[in-house]
Length: 441
Image 1: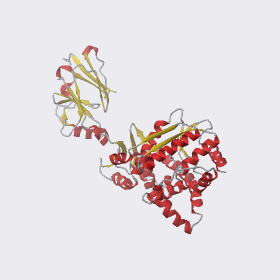
Image 2: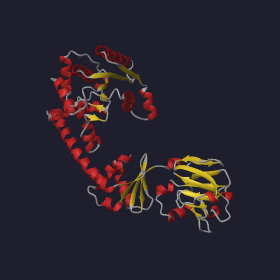
Image 3: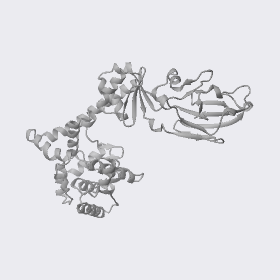
Image 4: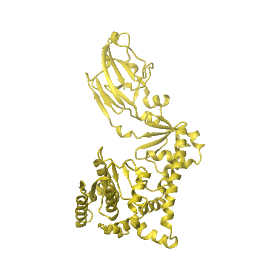
């Protein structure tokens, strides 16, 4: 009996407690209708959420009314939201299927709270088989072959153990009504093509294909668990975390085997694809400062290291005016505090994050900005000017450290390379009476 197995599966896998309050995503189709019936029969508290994507004209509205009727039948709260799915897909340049998924899960997350603890979806064993086959041909690696998991964060899929046939038999036995989505019969979408064409063809040669794949999914999940344990061990030995950067020693990396697989597992968390693994290995043997880019990060060659760092180039145009009397300024590099004082009240610090300048040489307003090519200053202790680019090379800063560097200028003269060195022309001397002090935190 499906109900008995349903409850046993929840208890065995500890998907949720009997007292948890649940939110069920209900389209009105066979699977979600059966999920509602099972939860009701098991005595679980649930509420219903229906997303109307407005993609099928009047049928979309009929689906909404049907699901509302289900909520009235079970006497449970009903949540509904209409989406302009086509407009969202066009604006975000994604497929209609991706748009619908993003819209509904964003909304479901809004509905979940301390009261409603879990979202239940009606994915079943056949859905999982289709997912694994699609992942295999798409090339998603070991993780893709394990398919969907029964519980991930606050999303629970309590029907993954059951086949579509078992769900259909239950619906017929219980004389349930549901809505048929005619788009499921179309091979326009990849999943439908696998469901309607590829799997039936394989079934003709291997009649046990669905049962075999279901068993394989269980094994793949266990293989993936072992795989992740090995990957995590390599990461622990290889990676060094420094602030928002990850440092990888190149020599140690090259000794690993299988190198390409381990490297991919390291870089994929930062937006890099499997196709960029060879690019990363190439820059490891390349010139100082060469890099590979993802949508959010860069991997940069810095001497004997590969550095994974956020792409901070977006704030290159930041220019902040500091006026006389300002005592605090926030910028992408931190918080700059400004203090005026007389020399007999100042405790001079050797901290590179602090600077003391002769106030009489300062002309407000000051400008806090990123350094740029062509900038120069007179480093403290030197009588000759030096380009900041050369100063940074001599200081052996990495590419990302250089890109994060700011300067403060007074009347178009750089008075402090922030966090590095003040300018000789602005230093405090024996004749200094008033000091302007900066500190970065």
